[in-house]
Image (tube, rainbow, N blue to C red; front, top):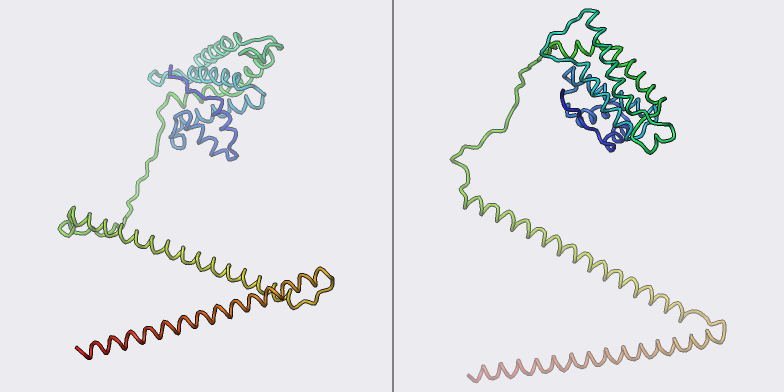
Length: 294
């Protein structure tokens, strides 16, 4: 008898998580290692059978452990119903009845040991009497009812249609081998590309930093302009209280002192620039005189 494909509780939950029935069946086929279920009739039957067992277990309210038990029994019964593909199948009514009776007895022998008292079902790996009856009815209404079809599908050679078609594919033109680069030229080509990419990345980074610096300078200038505007507005505002009058007087005094210092600094700077220009003129004159004497 072929090995029964395993199906974990996580795989059971994933099967029911798919909203699309086709996607759920594809996942189940992958779990059962039946990738050709869309083209092979026997694989499709097994996937559909496994899906019906899982849906029955979910609708009946079975736990993951109980579902695994029923799933294992379902595959054992299916393997018996499939028969031996190498042996010819007797299609007589007597043979079909004998196989069906044997299958019913096998279901009974597999299910009865799982009988568990109602109050212990939750803690034990078993089924209540009512659940066993539901499982037996499921097998009777599905596998046993269509036993002849199952045996026919799994014991007779199935015909397959294979269709072929010629397709013209346009491929890119292959460069002549003699024009290919040697190892050194290819390495130099890659090095040039890498250097060019690095230079472009460096230029982009410098441009980004320059833009950030310009934006920061503009923001600082805006803040200074706003502060100056607020200060000028404060100086121009007529004080309404004694405190405001004191603050206004202090601000006016500070502004006057600031203006005086700026004027003194400008005058000192202008004087220094004049002296520097005078010294430069004298140096140039002395140098010209020395050159003339030579």
